[in-house]
Amino acid sequence: MATAIAEIALKSDTSLASHDVIQIAGINTHVYGVDQAVKQAAANPQTSHWIVLHLAHPRTRSYTYTERMAHLVLDSYYKAPDSADGTPLPPLLAVTFDLRNHGERKVSEKANEDWARGNLMHAQDMFSGIIGTAQDVELVIDMLPAYLDPLILLRGKSAEGVTAPTKVVNIVSGVSQGGHISWQVAATGKAVAVVPIIGSPYLTFMLLQRLLVQVRKLEPTEADAVLNAVGVPLYELSYADLQAKVFKGKSDHLEQYWPEALHKLVAAADNRVFTGISQHKVSVRIINSREDPLVPARFSLPWLKQQGVLTEEDTSPLLFQQDNVGHVCTPVMVDELSEHLVRVVRSM
Image (cartoon, rainbow, N blue to C red; front, side):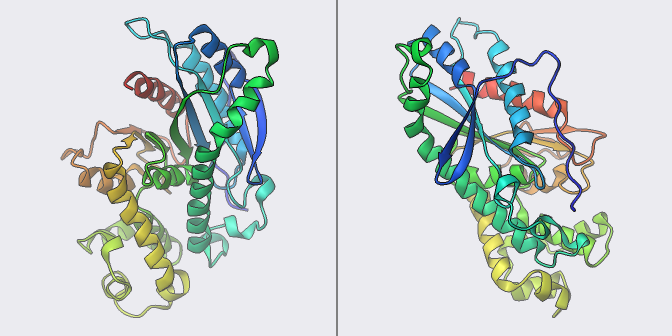
């Protein structure tokens, strides 16, 4: 079984939010904070919009991972002070569900493994899981408002006078594979802001680097050098050019693990991310670990450079990097998500 990313722990003083489960197109969708949102809306009837934070969990985990994130973020959000002019924060909900082929939706253990653990279809399985779950997030974004009135009415007297918001503002975050999913949703413009945590906007680079490390047995720095030596974005390369410039000619490694049809799909997804996010004016806050062996912060640098927000020292106002941690979402990272969420909401 693939090594699972470490679980997130609740703080001892975390207030737990209410928890509802609704079925959206056959997906058990977990909604946290309806009770708290109703209370906030009742106290501030002038508020016409609610915020919904969509959370996507890592590979090999389930919704219970992001459930803890939901409780932590909601607790922090409602403890935040009002803005300087006294304006209260709008109601907030957090939503999560099992990724495709995870939790109660799992159909194949092997499909969640990587090349190092014998899954020859790792790239296909991971990419299809990313794209498929991004589509699920987009579906939930579209459909959730239709379920809010019934959820509110279930509260009875405590919800008297509170109706579903006239506007729902969607923000997406996720960890590891959930971070990759966040980037894909951002490219569609379905969310006003995304906060990918140890995720990558550049799937072609990430997966080919992993292929060179796990199959060709290169060191990560060697694999990076091979890919960077190409001199152009990998998603702009034809399959023939990829063979010639990265694999130095016809290669069973490439055709077996990275077929041409897959290359076209991943390249198209990268192109959407590199062009669509700025077109839709989506706010981005990247949270990464500098020493992450799987998805290091440097995988996000090409996107930051293309946006013109990367310094010569490889820093950016859009990038939060934590040192001396590996492939893990730390309490510091969850705190940064919580604090950034408040900043984004107050800037609206």
